[in-house]
Length: 145
Image 1 (spheres, rainbow, N blue to C red):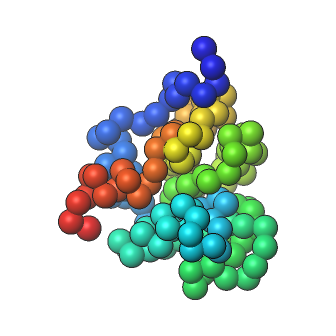
Image 2 (cartoon, rainbow, N blue to C red):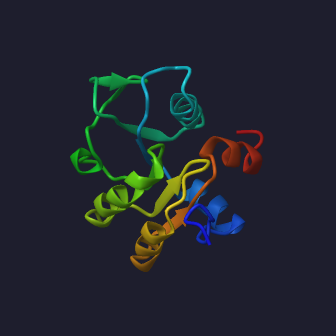
């Protein structure tokens, strides 16, 4: 079995519940480039009412929000962490998530799977969604948002 095979993912009901309860989303790898998927997804999430926290190595502001260099710099509650970094970086993101006590979900975007990191997050009581797009799933579950 390859690491690319998604072994761990919240159920449809859990995902809908996560969207309903989530207010804040840290977006790891949010590009300032409006043509990039991370930027398009973040814009959509803002539009439907979520507070986003961009996490990116450069710049001061993306989508009119302060840019943070890593998850630990965010001094506000974070409900969900939405990951747009390559799969090899997911374990480091989960380490940062586990150092906090507020994150309820780690979400990795399309084609991003790290089952070992997902297991660690789940063992800590954190919901995991892998290899799915937050925008696509939200639009599917809440078509009139």
